[in-house]
Image 1 (cartoon, rainbow, N blue to C red):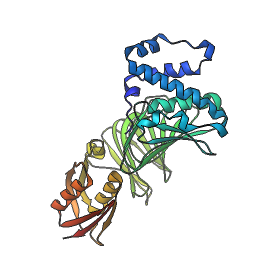
Image 2: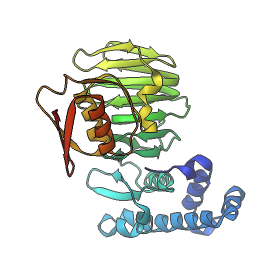
Image 3: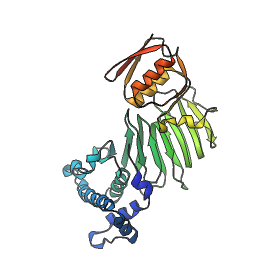
Image 4: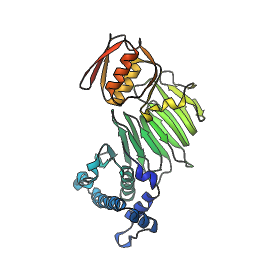
Length: 333
C-alpha cells in the first residue's frame, strides 16, 4: 500500500520543493519553511536529496531515446511495492515506486511535464492489482484509497481547472474542496460529480450495479436524463441493465468495511462472496454448479488469509473446499 505519510503530515512542503526544483540553477534559494523542514530530521534531508537526484535525471526525458527510467528511480525502487505509470501515447515513460515518497514523486514528475512538455497530454494511471490495495494523493490534494482490482486514470494539465478522472473498481475518495467540481467518469456513461466530500464508490466492470455511499459533503450521480443528488448517510445504486439510479437502504459503514479488512454479508450469495475473495486475495474460485445462488450468508468476516475465510464459510454452511496454489474449488459436503 502506498503510504502517504509525507503528504499527510507536510502537505505544504511539496509546493516548496516543486518551486525550488523549477527555479534556474543560479537562482535556487531555500525557502525558510523548506530549510526548517530539512533541519528537523536527517531523513528529511535524505528524501530531499533523492528528489533532487530524480529531478536531475528526469531532464533527460526531453530526449526520449536516451531516457533511462531505471536509473532515475533506482533507489526508490528499493522500496517498490506497486508501479505508478505516467503515460504518453507513444510509450510508458516513467515509473514511480510506492512507499513514503510516492505521492510527491508523482507531483514532481507532473510538474516537470507541465514545464517541459507543454501542449502534450500526460495521462496518469494508478492502480491496485488483485490481492493488493493502495493509497494515492492526487495533484489537487484529494486522497483516494483503492481496493483490489481498481484503477484511477486522469490527464494532467496545469492550465486546466477542471478535475476529471476515469475510474473502475472500488475506492474511498476524500476530495479536496474547490470551486471546480471533481468529476468521476465510470464505464457505462455514469458521471459522479463531487464537491469536497468523502464517499465510497464501488464500480467494478463485471458487477451489475454501481454503488455510491456518501459519508459527508455532496455528490451527484448522472446518466443521461437520470440524476440523483445525494446527502450524507445515503446509499445509491445505478443499475447497468435498466440505466436507472435509485436510493437504497443499508448500513453506510458496511459499504466501506473493506478499509478495515471486513466483509459485511447481508443475504449475500456464495457466488458474490467468492467474487470479493477473488479480488481481495488474487485467487480463482470454482463453484459446484448450482451452489453459488443456493447458499446465502449474513454476518461479517474479518480474517487474515483466504484459508481462514474459507474455514469460516464452511463452518457457516454445508460446503467443503480444496486449495491448490491460487485455485480454490468449492463443493457441497
